[in-house]
Amino acid sequence: MAAEAEILDELRRLRARMPQLTGVLAASVDGLVLAHDTPGVEPEGVAALTAAALGVAVRTADATGRGDLRELLVRGRYGYIATYAAGDTAVLTLLAPDGVSVGRLHLEGRRSGAHIGDLVAAAVAPPARPAPRTTARSTARLPTRPAPTRTTTTTDSASTTDR
Image 1 (cartoon, one colour):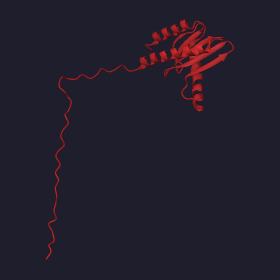
Image 2 (cartoon, rainbow, N blue to C red; image 1 turned 135 degrees about the vertical axis):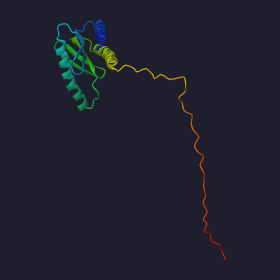
Image 3 (cartoon, rainbow, N blue to C red; image 1 turned 90 degrees about the horizontal axis):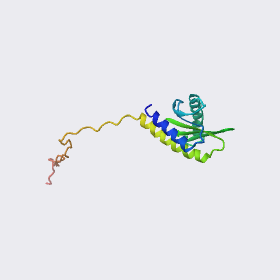
Image 4 (tube, rainbow, N blue to C red; image 1 turned 60 degrees about the horizontal axis):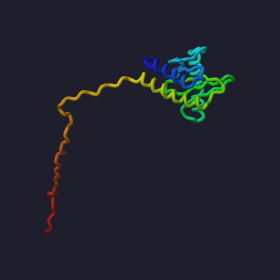
């Protein structure tokens, strides 16, 4: 993907803003890694598990009438796994230790998720077509006058006369 370097830059900026993060990963919703910075963690496995968890979460949100999935938060004994929607086709997963500010995690995750979603959308969008060239001659048409309408009256030729 053409945006991989830009996505990786965003992941690095995110880790700089939140140094307590232990890993960050951007993946497609079907579990393919787009970019990652996950020392000590297998990114392909995390991406695949995220896709599976995302599938269940999407169905749960739908079944309970909660609308489109925005985020998923899992808390384990040693910390958090937070997944945020990144546009329609990607997700951002953050790994954080226990004791992290969940509010800050959400703030930064949502912000980066939105930015990554924009990068992915721009990378898959078809290139813009140039506007058609026009000639100096005007192609606009002038309105035409409607044809005059004629009213014809008919008279009854079989008139009756009084005698």
